Image 1 (cartoon, rainbow, N blue to C red):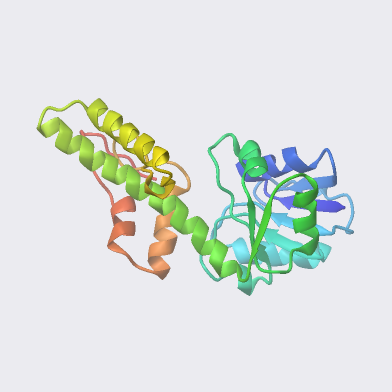
Image 2 (image 1 turned 90 degrees about the horizontal axis):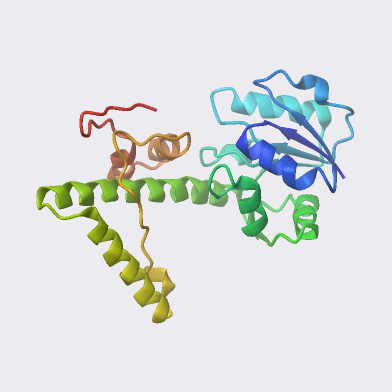
Length: 242
Protein backbone atom coordinates (compact mmCIF):
# COMPACT_ATOMS: atom_id res chain seq x y z
CA UNK A 1 0.00 0.00 0.00
CA UNK A 2 1.56 3.28 -1.15
CA UNK A 3 0.35 6.45 0.56
CA UNK A 4 1.05 10.12 -0.07
CA UNK A 5 0.35 12.57 2.77
CA UNK A 6 -0.01 16.14 1.55
CA UNK A 7 0.56 18.44 4.51
CA UNK A 8 3.02 17.98 7.32
CA UNK A 9 1.53 19.95 10.17
CA UNK A 10 0.18 18.34 13.33
CA UNK A 11 -2.33 16.13 11.51
CA UNK A 12 0.09 15.11 8.76
CA UNK A 13 2.80 14.26 11.29
CA UNK A 14 0.33 12.22 13.36
CA UNK A 15 -0.79 10.25 10.30
CA UNK A 16 2.82 9.61 9.30
CA UNK A 17 3.69 8.43 12.80
CA UNK A 18 0.83 5.92 12.71
CA UNK A 19 1.28 4.65 9.16
CA UNK A 20 4.93 4.68 8.13
CA UNK A 21 5.92 1.53 10.07
CA UNK A 22 3.38 -0.60 8.21
CA UNK A 23 3.02 1.09 4.81
CA UNK A 24 5.05 2.93 2.18
CA UNK A 25 4.40 6.56 3.07
CA UNK A 26 5.73 9.70 1.40
CA UNK A 27 5.16 13.24 2.62
CA UNK A 28 4.84 16.52 0.76
CA UNK A 29 3.71 19.94 1.87
CA UNK A 30 2.43 22.63 -0.51
CA UNK A 31 3.55 25.33 1.94
CA UNK A 32 7.04 23.96 2.55
CA UNK A 33 8.12 23.00 -0.99
CA UNK A 34 8.48 19.30 -0.19
CA UNK A 35 7.69 18.19 -3.75
CA UNK A 36 11.03 16.37 -3.94
CA UNK A 37 9.76 13.74 -1.52
CA UNK A 38 7.39 12.28 -4.13
CA UNK A 39 9.23 9.10 -5.10
CA UNK A 40 6.81 7.69 -7.68
CA UNK A 41 3.34 8.10 -9.14
CA UNK A 42 1.87 4.77 -8.09
CA UNK A 43 0.12 5.96 -4.95
CA UNK A 44 -2.97 4.07 -3.89
CA UNK A 45 -4.10 6.69 -1.40
CA UNK A 46 -3.81 10.46 -1.16
CA UNK A 47 -4.32 11.90 2.33
CA UNK A 48 -4.88 15.66 2.49
CA UNK A 49 -3.79 17.23 5.78
CA UNK A 50 -2.96 20.86 5.03
CA UNK A 51 -5.13 23.73 6.35
CA UNK A 52 -8.12 25.05 4.48
CA UNK A 53 -7.68 28.38 2.69
CA UNK A 54 -8.56 30.05 -0.59
CA UNK A 55 -6.20 27.79 -2.55
CA UNK A 56 -7.27 24.56 -0.88
CA UNK A 57 -9.40 23.14 -3.68
CA UNK A 58 -6.91 23.98 -6.43
CA UNK A 59 -4.11 22.34 -4.42
CA UNK A 60 -6.13 19.16 -3.91
CA UNK A 61 -6.98 19.05 -7.64
CA UNK A 62 -3.30 19.49 -8.45
CA UNK A 63 -2.19 16.54 -6.36
CA UNK A 64 -5.06 14.35 -7.53
CA UNK A 65 -4.26 14.98 -11.19
CA UNK A 66 -0.54 14.48 -10.60
CA UNK A 67 -0.70 11.06 -8.93
CA UNK A 68 -4.23 9.80 -9.76
CA UNK A 69 -4.83 7.96 -6.47
CA UNK A 70 -7.49 5.31 -6.08
CA UNK A 71 -8.87 7.16 -3.05
CA UNK A 72 -8.52 10.71 -1.74
CA UNK A 73 -9.22 11.29 1.94
CA UNK A 74 -9.36 14.81 3.36
CA UNK A 75 -8.43 14.99 7.04
CA UNK A 76 -8.46 18.79 7.08
CA UNK A 77 -11.33 20.78 8.56
CA UNK A 78 -13.27 22.26 5.64
CA UNK A 79 -16.59 24.02 4.93
CA UNK A 80 -19.60 21.77 4.38
CA UNK A 81 -19.74 20.63 0.76
CA UNK A 82 -16.00 20.93 0.01
CA UNK A 83 -15.22 17.22 -0.30
CA UNK A 84 -18.19 16.52 -2.56
CA UNK A 85 -16.85 19.11 -5.02
CA UNK A 86 -13.45 17.44 -4.91
CA UNK A 87 -14.80 13.89 -5.27
CA UNK A 88 -13.10 13.03 -1.99
CA UNK A 89 -13.96 11.38 1.33
CA UNK A 90 -13.77 13.38 4.55
CA UNK A 91 -12.36 12.08 7.85
CA UNK A 92 -12.49 14.42 10.88
CA UNK A 93 -9.64 14.34 13.39
CA UNK A 94 -10.47 14.75 17.07
CA UNK A 95 -8.05 14.92 19.96
CA UNK A 96 -5.77 17.12 21.96
CA UNK A 97 -2.69 18.70 20.47
CA UNK A 98 0.03 17.49 20.49
CA UNK A 99 -1.30 13.96 21.18
CA UNK A 100 -3.05 13.57 17.84
CA UNK A 101 -1.39 10.27 16.91
CA UNK A 102 -2.60 8.69 20.14
CA UNK A 103 -6.04 10.24 19.61
CA UNK A 104 -6.32 8.82 16.09
CA UNK A 105 -5.39 5.36 17.38
CA UNK A 106 -7.97 5.47 20.17
CA UNK A 107 -10.92 7.09 18.42
CA UNK A 108 -13.33 5.50 15.97
CA UNK A 109 -12.22 6.71 12.53
CA UNK A 110 -15.22 8.34 10.88
CA UNK A 111 -15.34 8.59 7.10
CA UNK A 112 -17.85 10.70 5.21
CA UNK A 113 -18.50 9.04 1.86
CA UNK A 114 -18.30 5.43 0.73
CA UNK A 115 -15.30 5.71 -1.62
CA UNK A 116 -12.85 4.68 1.10
CA UNK A 117 -12.69 0.88 0.91
CA UNK A 118 -8.88 0.65 0.87
CA UNK A 119 -8.47 3.36 3.50
CA UNK A 120 -11.04 1.84 5.82
CA UNK A 121 -9.31 -1.54 5.57
CA UNK A 122 -5.96 0.13 6.25
CA UNK A 123 -7.16 1.58 9.54
CA UNK A 124 -8.98 -1.61 10.51
CA UNK A 125 -5.74 -3.54 10.01
CA UNK A 126 -4.13 -1.18 12.52
CA UNK A 127 -6.79 -2.08 15.08
CA UNK A 128 -8.69 1.20 14.70
CA UNK A 129 -12.49 1.11 14.63
CA UNK A 130 -14.09 2.51 11.48
CA UNK A 131 -17.47 4.13 10.91
CA UNK A 132 -18.56 5.11 7.39
CA UNK A 133 -21.29 7.71 6.95
CA UNK A 134 -23.19 8.27 3.72
CA UNK A 135 -21.92 11.73 2.76
CA UNK A 136 -18.81 13.85 3.38
CA UNK A 137 -21.10 16.73 4.32
CA UNK A 138 -22.03 14.81 7.46
CA UNK A 139 -18.49 14.50 8.81
CA UNK A 140 -17.59 18.02 7.68
CA UNK A 141 -20.43 19.32 9.85
CA UNK A 142 -19.58 16.98 12.73
CA UNK A 143 -16.05 18.40 12.91
CA UNK A 144 -17.10 22.05 12.66
CA UNK A 145 -19.85 21.63 15.24
CA UNK A 146 -17.54 19.70 17.59
CA UNK A 147 -14.94 22.44 17.91
CA UNK A 148 -17.69 25.06 18.04
CA UNK A 149 -19.38 23.30 20.95
CA UNK A 150 -16.04 23.35 22.78
CA UNK A 151 -15.65 27.06 22.04
CA UNK A 152 -19.15 27.83 23.24
CA UNK A 153 -18.46 26.02 26.51
CA UNK A 154 -15.27 28.03 26.94
CA UNK A 155 -17.28 31.22 26.56
CA UNK A 156 -19.83 30.00 29.11
CA UNK A 157 -16.99 29.21 31.51
CA UNK A 158 -15.86 32.80 31.03
CA UNK A 159 -19.36 34.05 31.88
CA UNK A 160 -19.53 31.91 35.02
CA UNK A 161 -16.14 33.23 36.15
CA UNK A 162 -17.33 36.82 35.67
CA UNK A 163 -20.41 36.23 37.83
CA UNK A 164 -18.41 34.33 40.44
CA UNK A 165 -15.96 37.24 40.68
CA UNK A 166 -18.80 39.72 41.12
CA UNK A 167 -20.31 37.78 44.03
CA UNK A 168 -16.81 37.05 45.41
CA UNK A 169 -17.12 33.27 45.02
CA UNK A 170 -14.00 31.19 44.27
CA UNK A 171 -14.22 29.63 40.82
CA UNK A 172 -13.07 26.39 42.42
CA UNK A 173 -16.56 25.98 43.85
CA UNK A 174 -17.94 25.78 40.31
CA UNK A 175 -15.41 23.12 39.36
CA UNK A 176 -16.15 21.14 42.51
CA UNK A 177 -19.90 21.32 41.87
CA UNK A 178 -19.53 20.23 38.24
CA UNK A 179 -17.27 17.32 39.18
CA UNK A 180 -19.90 16.19 41.70
CA UNK A 181 -22.56 16.57 39.00
CA UNK A 182 -20.61 14.41 36.54
CA UNK A 183 -19.91 11.77 39.19
CA UNK A 184 -23.59 11.67 40.07
CA UNK A 185 -24.79 11.06 36.53
CA UNK A 186 -22.04 8.52 35.97
CA UNK A 187 -23.35 6.61 38.99
CA UNK A 188 -26.88 6.94 37.61
CA UNK A 189 -25.60 5.48 34.31
CA UNK A 190 -26.65 8.61 32.47
CA UNK A 191 -23.33 9.86 31.00
CA UNK A 192 -25.16 11.87 28.35
CA UNK A 193 -25.65 14.58 31.00
CA UNK A 194 -21.92 15.07 31.60
CA UNK A 195 -20.57 18.63 31.48
CA UNK A 196 -17.36 20.17 30.25
CA UNK A 197 -15.10 21.27 33.11
CA UNK A 198 -13.02 24.10 31.68
CA UNK A 199 -10.74 26.89 32.82
CA UNK A 200 -12.13 30.26 31.67
CA UNK A 201 -10.04 31.82 28.89
CA UNK A 202 -8.47 35.25 29.17
CA UNK A 203 -9.06 37.56 26.23
CA UNK A 204 -10.28 36.28 22.88
CA UNK A 205 -10.13 32.56 22.24
CA UNK A 206 -6.80 31.63 20.73
CA UNK A 207 -5.74 28.48 18.96
CA UNK A 208 -5.84 27.60 15.30
CA UNK A 209 -9.13 25.71 15.07
CA UNK A 210 -11.89 26.83 17.45
CA UNK A 211 -12.58 30.37 16.24
CA UNK A 212 -11.78 29.77 12.53
CA UNK A 213 -14.06 26.73 12.49
CA UNK A 214 -16.87 28.69 14.15
CA UNK A 215 -16.50 31.35 11.45
CA UNK A 216 -16.63 28.75 8.67
CA UNK A 217 -19.79 27.19 10.09
CA UNK A 218 -21.44 30.54 10.84
CA UNK A 219 -20.86 31.67 7.26
CA UNK A 220 -22.83 28.71 5.94
CA UNK A 221 -25.34 28.26 8.77
CA UNK A 222 -25.51 31.45 10.86
CA UNK A 223 -26.09 31.23 14.61
CA UNK A 224 -25.89 33.68 17.51
CA UNK A 225 -24.06 30.96 19.44
CA UNK A 226 -21.30 30.74 16.84
CA UNK A 227 -20.87 34.51 16.80
CA UNK A 228 -20.37 34.46 20.56
CA UNK A 229 -17.31 32.24 20.04
CA UNK A 230 -15.38 34.41 17.62
CA UNK A 231 -16.51 37.99 18.19
CA UNK A 232 -13.80 40.35 19.41
CA UNK A 233 -13.72 40.78 23.14
CA UNK A 234 -11.64 42.66 25.64
CA UNK A 235 -11.42 40.93 28.98
CA UNK A 236 -9.36 42.03 31.93
CA UNK A 237 -7.53 44.50 29.72
CA UNK A 238 -6.12 41.66 27.64
CA UNK A 239 -7.14 41.75 24.00
CA UNK A 240 -6.14 38.93 21.69
CA UNK A 241 -6.81 38.25 18.05
CA UNK A 242 -6.56 35.08 15.99
